[in-house]
Amino acid sequence: MVHPPWENQTATVEFVLLGFSTVWQLNLALFTTFLAAYIFTVTGNTLIVLLVVLDHHLHTPMYFFLVNLSFLEIGYTSNIVPKMLASLSAGQNTISVASCLTQFYFFGSLAATECLLLAAMSYDRYVAICRPLHYTILMNGQVCIVLAASSWVSCFLLTALTIILLSRLTFCGPNEIDHFFCDFTPHVQLSCTDTSLMETTAFATSSAVTLVPFLLITASYSCILTILRIPSNAGRRKAFSTCSSHFTVVTMFYGTLIATYLAPSAHPSQFLRKVFSLLYTILTPMFNPSIYSLRNRDIHEALKRYLSRKTVLLQ
Picture (cartoon, rainbow, N blue to C red):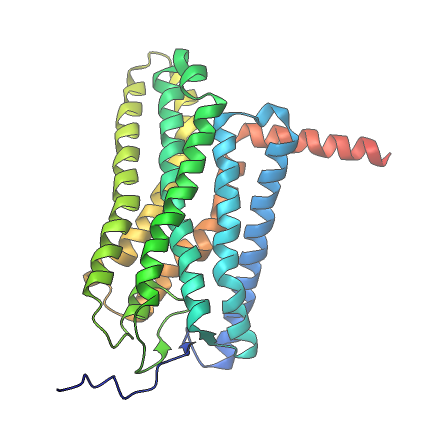
């Protein structure tokens, strides 16, 4: 009987994340940039969570979903950036197979959850603009909790299926992952066993949690376009202001996902793929608090009320 060539090889127990460069000067610049982005992301999203929790004026469905999104962004970046910073500063670029699977599990789960949360937020905007008289009925507290909980639970369960299949793969050849985190494709490429079932399952689950929400978001905004028939300019501006921030976030998130995963022929270089990955793993979570706060009067007013209370207490 002819044995496969990998049967007599030693199984890989850890991977090496190559990151961006081995040049110390560049790594130092990247470390400073990514650390600043991480601090801004965590601080900005934490501030949004605190303002929404502490200010009863913000206890509405839109801000309930925004809190979920902020928690997600904090977890999203915390799953990837600390390991990247350790690699850039101390050269700790090795990661065990189990840790790599764990990192990809949370990355995949949180990315998928963001897709569903953005879809839920688009539905909230659709109801608020297109069916305002039924808003309190269609978007009551129970509905919001169900939409948010189902987004988190379903995505973590679906990604667990992919992780189970990934954990059964054998890695016995090169152990270098040409990326700054344990993404799916560079991880699977190192396997010396058949990955066809793994890739088919991953494609099916990822399509379900990205394309379906994208279609729902598109349908919601197609209906929202009917606000163009609102006779008054004031009404038109008010309608646009309630969904412009969300639309900007959706455009950034899905734009970078498409550039990274659905258009590989446009950037065959792995370096460019890593650059695009930076956009949705670091830059998008960093910009989200700015997008929702700089263009949001409710957040401005809540921050003023909070600062006023702090000032009074300090006097």
